[in-house]
Image 1 (cartoon, rainbow, N blue to C red):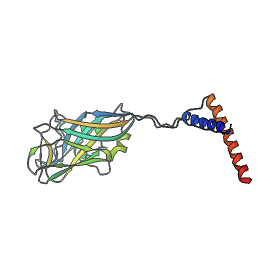
Image 2 (cartoon, rainbow, N blue to C red):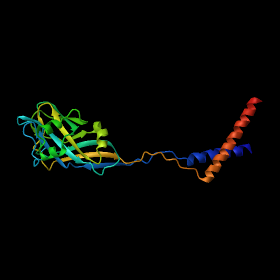
Image 3 (cartoon, rainbow, N blue to C red):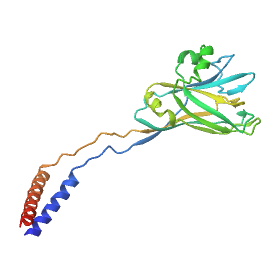
Length: 241
């Protein structure tokens, strides 16, 4: 009889554990690719021509260039867990540098977006593309042979700016790029070149769900408590004896 009661208690406990479910939602990840709505460059002295989608950056033609990329993040929901900017350039795109590598860096542009895109931002737009007080998104050392050559494909991780990127979901994000060191990148780039913002988005829920016990499980729980109490009382009596 005692063994029967013990087995019943163990079965009740297992049933309770099986019925009480604690957990978050099932992870759901999506990869989203966003093309720029606009792109271009600002020279220190020449400004930006809206009809020119070339995204040259660095020292060229007697001045320093900084580029920009505008992305519409409307409709994107969830949490971005990973992001990168991908450049798949064609055979006519070139770079020029005197170092083994040219450092390319990206920051968020927080100036007048409309003025930047229509070419009227002037020197303020140029400065804003390298505002050290704005969010830093990422950088990439691009390998160059030190002379003019075909521009390689480049992928820049944006994971440094994930917190700011998530705050920009549903809005327009503009990234400003600049180089450190001599030379330039993406010379003669055109509208046919592929520039993509790639986002890995987690759309799962984080809410903890507790499944209520049905009436039958409630009875099993009560039985388990009774059996547990009897066992405790029996052990106590044996110790006293």
